[in-house]
Length: 483
Image 1 (tube, one colour):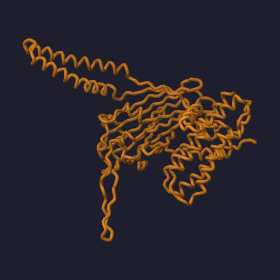
Image 2 (cartoon, rainbow, N blue to C red):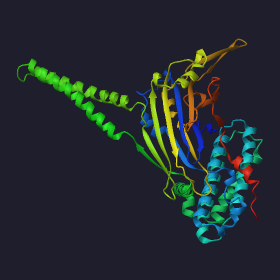
Image 3 (tube, rainbow, N blue to C red):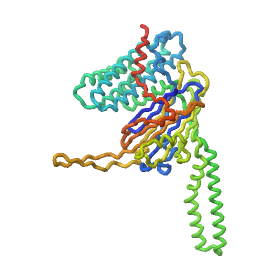
Image 4 (cartoon, rainbow, N blue to C red):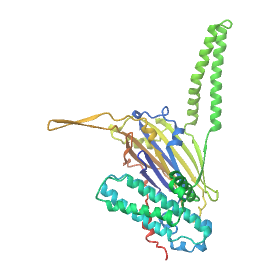
């Protein structure tokens, strides 16, 4: 059964991720039920603008911990591999390492309890030390291969240091965990010394300029993504149809305007001031209603059609890995599938408020041929930012008053909104599977995300928590590197 991972990414964003194998055909739908009181609709939120600014996707080859390169004993026989194979395995490990520590760091920074935070930070520090040692133990001696290794080593050292320092900057204040804090700082100092003094990866000018070091690491990040992250070619659909609709709308409006002009000329004798004023009014109304008429026609014709197509290519071979179609639109209630409506009817009566439905769909067809060596799946991660929604929300102004021993105190309360989210997953010709979430949010953050129970006659899909660095480390421990 298909697995989907759901988690809160940032203060105001939700991330969905799933994996697909060669030959898979999958459709993934999301229905955002936005309460009308939020003031979000087609008149306040442009779907195309939100797609480009609020929806961030990343598609890459995916490999579980058993495929972690450079920690498998068979990888020691470097002379049995080509340079391209070495680079692919190296990039896979470096990319997974970077994504894993970034994920764990984000989760750790959301912890507010000091003891829980520093315990998890101590474990994260141990994992980073362990994986960096295992990675460096397999440094190649061939100069052609060593340059690729040094690029990855330089980036991972810097990125681990930055993530740990950033996590410490958001740490809860406590004097009881000074040993853990000092341990993390020593690791960061050690990695800095390793890069700059031992290996001399970066020049003194680069070290002293934050802009230069940041841009260099961004370049190294792109290098380790080579062969792992898929190249995306996005193309808007219906461009020619939109031009046709624009021409047709303009023609129909001009037909009405021309008829009015001819009638006005017949009503007024000669070129008079009254005729000129009448023509000015006619042309004024043409400009007012032309855009509205064109937009109405375009929405009617475009309804239910995909908005974009995407081709995913392997960055090394340029072979097509998958093709996708993407929908994003505000839906009318009569267009919502019956099963989705049935799920939403199960809400408590107090939660049944009028809503505007924003529908997102992505249909993927993966090429039916094996991926590059070492890869068995591709992973898609889609991050939905709720910041454009939060801009329309009201700030909390109410206060709650309390009495204690004759003294009256008050406490300001925030205004919260609940967004219902229905996810639908369909693999090939199989029956669709469903899940429903309640997203409680305010202007500044997502308060909580909870999964709701579905009606008994509707099949749910399996949810899975986001994998982390610790998960991969447990696999590494069972595949020790040969001395």
